[in-house]
Image (tube, rainbow, N blue to C red; front, side, top):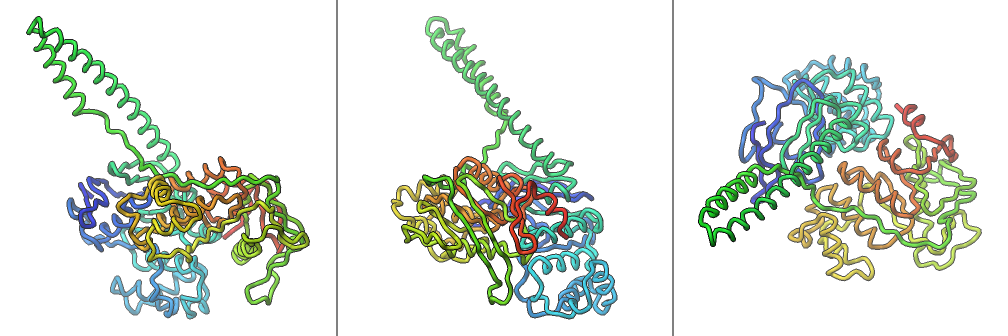
Amino acid sequence: MEDGAFFHGVRKVFSGITFLLDGERTALVGENGVGKSTLLKCLSGELELNRGKVIRSRNLRVGSLPQEVPAELAGLTVRQVLERSLERIGAIGEDWRIDVMLDEIQVSAAVADGAFGALSGGWQRLILIAGAARLEEPDILILDEPTNHLDIGNINVLERWLASDITMPMLIVSHDREFLNRVSTRTLFLREDGAHVFKIPFARAREELLRRDAAAAVRRKVEEREIKRLEAVAARYHAWGVKNPDFHKRQRATETRIAHIEAAKTPVYQARERRLELGDGEIEARVTLRVADLTLTTPDGARTLLKIDRFALAAGDRVALLGANGAGKSTLLNGLAAAYDPKAVHYDGSAAVRFNPGARLVYFDQTMRDLPLHESLLDYVLEADGVTEREAIRALAQAGFAFIRIREPILTLSHGERSRLTFLKLKLLRPNLYLLDEPTSHLDIEGQEDLEAQLEEAEVACVFVSHDRWFTRSAATRFVEIRKGRLVEVESPDAFFDSQG
């Protein structure tokens, strides 16, 4: 791409973007709302740039995977979904290629002839990726958030495919830092100040970008000091020129030097100011939650998922809940949330789930299904008790929402922005106990780091479920695995991560 720019009406999405994609597996990284998905659509030909151009090799074939699985595929069989990949390249009738691919990824004939919609969200995405990469034979593969809805096991499978089995150039958009570090060989950062390319994997590239930003900031300070010094010199020459006009020449020469320095000042990147803050409500006693003799079943009650003899959560504990798909992680979070009654002053001492009387619980659901999408951002925040309009506007600004957008419906926000808005509302409720189900699913990397820092700084209790290995290691102080229907406390999550898939 050369000098690419794209606008939604008068609003700039990105501009001045220039980069080259080569034979590497390139990670495309950027904040929510910086234009990554729009850029992918421009590269694939779905959208046209407003300025600049996309230069493609002759007869280039692009394979791609969108962020969300198309709803119309649910009623098709797995085989029919894969036949669509053959149709795209004019290979109708070559169904033997589907059989070979299914054998490679160890999908049985029964599954292939079954409904695509009956598969888990993770396996739906894996099937689509395999179809795009194996059947469509692209020259480059573009993947937009490929780990969305994948559990640890499927992420491990996908990493093996991309790093070893699928040998082709790729452009991968993801906020999963561990995944990018294992898969990428090249990193492209998309920011307000343009595109920054490093021929190294994500973690090293991020360190190099931060070093570059720090060095630019130092140079800028030196330049600013020199400008101030010269301005003082020019002011003295101006005063002395009253008695000796020759000093006016020196004044003009000094002002010319100032102008040259101003014109060539080192650009310094300023990230958008947006804090993802957690509320830190006080709690008098150390123990926030106790569980004793709790049995959890499947939704239909037909099978016992989990039995908990004893479990305690203290203020400041951040517990990562580990377990294979179907082990009961979300069921446990839902059970704890359902046992909490905010209107009760005292809790039954004989109950299976007992809360500290001072506990104030909030629950983050990754689907955010309760968000009132047609309500404005401001009205949603004002629903928090005791929040004035002025306080709500200030809180929205601190979270990175522009004033011109706060009266727009939540529907206009990206998924990442909706996550930020939800966390903002939770903060205003001043909780001291958080239940978080996949809290980083839609957050960009800066947002994930912000959440990690806030969890560490706030003296709140937290139980969370996450498929993000980097976040799990960074955010948790305790690791509890659901193993054969029991809670087992472990020192590290790594053995569990490695055992999946």
